[in-house]
Image 1: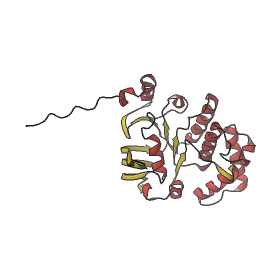
Image 2: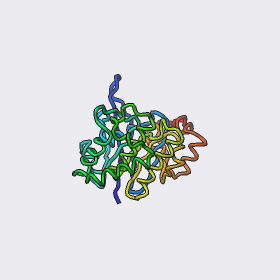
Image 3: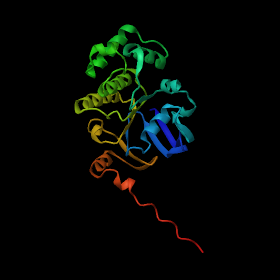
Image 4: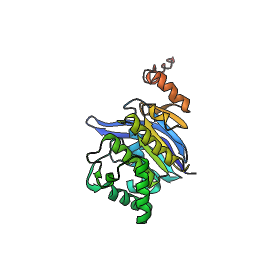
Length: 260
């Protein structure tokens, strides 16, 4: 069983006003086969956690550790993290003009696996995965994310996840911008990957609607760069009813009485 371990993670970003701390001591453990939902209001640090794990240069880890089966993830380059089994489905996938989806997918698979997949098997795998995601076969010859709708971009992210078969998948607000039909299709894709039992999923969202289709084992509430509450699926139901007000507007702890 593979384990992704995050201990006391602090992350900052540079702003016009100077360095700003976003993550303020995050502890989290994800194991193979587990689904962890990271929930919280906008600006709470959820996406910062995703990009820090993936190795985005904008996010500076100032202290803490991230390990994958004991190996130091923070010491790895971005491509080394991918080969180690980490995958990030981005909230805002970027366009790659001049590179077709089919070439991009096969190049990515070759880079992660260390060798090119056998062409006949690969073409079959891609066609089957695209059919499951209700994607037109002509999609494979379009340039990556160029002119894609929001739903097409998110389906393409899950297509990558299905074909690359990571050990840990970080899904950064995969539900944003999706209508109900697209949300179901994308969720079914995630569940197909999960059904193998080998992938750990870190699902970042601030809505509970995707959790109707992808059932989490654990729910973690993020506010102001920290995990402020943890629980099972019932915590997501409570957030649906109550929102984040009790965390965001919680009174500050009383100051200790002065000593004479």
